[in-house]
Structures are given as structure tokens and as C-alpha cells.
Image (cartoon, rainbow, N blue to C red; front, top):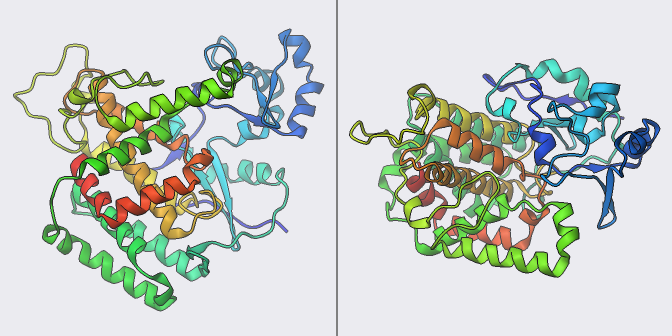
Length: 431
């Protein structure tokens, strides 16, 4: 029996494919035996004059060109399979994107990836209009047993407890008459409080009472808290988190270099990011900059000073610093992650709710850091909406997909940042 499809109501969030081809240039696509059979029947080996699949670590993947684009991406920016045979002839992973399914015991949550430019820009139709396609694609997946969501540790969360947490955090994110700085520092404080609490002692109605108390207290608590700068170790851990989310290994490169050379290269780049000195390593989609010059870039929601003249090659006024638009993008992204089932459980490496929320908060901090980094790369002191769009898209492309983000090392990073109150202090420094 198939679980009901739950598409969250996200006011202001829309999506339709606009054929930009970015996903075909950006993602490495794993294909199933069913996909391979369809592509074989379509005769693509003869059409392309080459193999269109590579084998890597026991799985089959669509081959990529030298520039990283999918072998099926045409010169017109459109998928050759889609153009000739239609949407349903494509590999299932390609059909699904940017939607992501997270099944649990009550339903299948439908999340949406902000690695898609149309999602980031909220262009197209209401999410609900895609229900038919999502249902059709979900029925092509093998039926699986219901997956329980853990609250903390091995504690199984009830449906009411999950809904209570979703509602409380969503209400805070949608709260009116607060500044973006308060919104995201407050979110860090709420998530830190959940990570530090023994949730086994506050089950059921008590959990609702705890969340009600916290969400009502956060505005009053923030001004009373320590406002010290993040420690060097906190910044180092954040830069390490940035590296793990922007590392972009391509199968073709890995096969050419070999395992040992690839691991050594990755280790060297990781050390440079952790050190945070000198020129940043070459990174796809970002200019290399001196880490010192990056530190002079202002926070995401700091208002540009009229006395600072923008470089001549920067954005126009209509494209530049728009705090409301940036706040809207971050709200849509985090709300879609929580309500779309991508903040814990099957949508995020099977993590318990508290650890999943910690990881989502690190994702947010990483995006805020990368926004400033992208701005520095174009020689700007203040960030723009475009900088934030690039950063959110880059961070969300790995969320739920990069298995290394579920390792013990990543969990320890989140734990240290929360227990040292560095999640909040970093949020304060970056917004």
C-alpha cells in the first residue's frame, strides 16, 4: 500500500522547469536497471557513437563530458532523451528533480531542492499543481517499509511530536515584525536548546509546552545572552563544513586520477580551507580570493553605506542588496527543508530530529558564509541577492545526497558548535 503524498503549503514558493539545463551540468546521475533498459531500447549508443554510462563503485552513472555536463545534454541546453522521447523516457532521477521524497510512517513528504534555479527564484506554478507527476513517479519506486522518525537518540517520535516541532519552528520562521538578524539568531538559539535538552523527559504535551516557552522567550533572551565573537576554532569548523558542502568530485576525474591521488588532492584542499589563510583553493562556481579580503565583506543583512561606491562591474541597483528578498529566500529554503521532510529521518540520512536540525543550521551558516565569499570574489563589500542565490543553490545540492555529511565527524562538529553556543554566535557574525 502506497503512503499518502504530502506536499507542504509554502506560500510564495513556486516551481516549473524553465529548461536552463543547470541540473544537467551540475549533477552526477545514478541510473537503475530499468533506466538502462529504456536507454538501450532507445538506441543511444548508436545515436551518440559512444557509451553513455560509466561504472563506479558498483553502480551505473550517466557519463559526463569533459566540462562535467551530462552526455545527453544538447548544444541547445535541452536533454536529448526528453526532446525525442518525452519526460517519462528519462532516467527516474532526472524526472524527479527537483522533487525529493521522504517516506515515514504517516505519509511521504515531498521536498524540493533549491539547487534548481527556478526553485530559488520561485518561478512557475504552485507546488500542489505537480501532485499528479509526483504520484506517478513515486509509484515507479520500490515499495518500502514505513520509516520511523527518531526524536533524539533511539527515541521514536510520535506523529504529534513531529507535527509540534514542525509547527513551532515554522511559526518562528514566519514571524512578522522581527528583523532577519533576530529570525536566524533566534533559530540558532532554538535549535541549540533542542540539541542540549534531554527530550526523553519532555514527551507528548510537555514537548509542546517546552517549544511554546522557547519560541515565546527567544526575542527576550537574545539581548541578554553573551555577545562575544566566535572563537577561531568555531570559524575553522565552519570553514571545514563549507568545504564538505562544496566539494564536487566528478566520476570522470576520479577514474582518471585514481583513488590515491584523488584522496591526497582532497586532503590538501581540505587543509587549506581549515586554515583559512592565503588564497582559497580553486572551487567550481566561485572565484579564488584571499581569505583576509573576504573577512572585510559585510554580513548578509548589513545595509550598504551610501559612502561606499560599488565597483563598475557589479550589479545594478535593482539586482543588488535587497534584504527583504534575501530574507524571503532563506525563509522559503529552511521552511521547505523542515516541512518537506528534508530536515531529519529518511530525507536526511536517517538522522534524529535534534541532530538533523543541527545539520540544517550548519547548512544555513554555510550558505551565509558562502554568500559573503561569492561577493568577495566579484570585488564587492556588500552581498547581493545573486550572491545568496548562488550560495543556497550550492549548499542545497549536497543536502541529503552527500553521504559524508552523515559521518561521525560531521555529527561531532554540529555537537561542538551547539554546546559552545557557536551556532548562535556564528549566525550573529554572518547576518
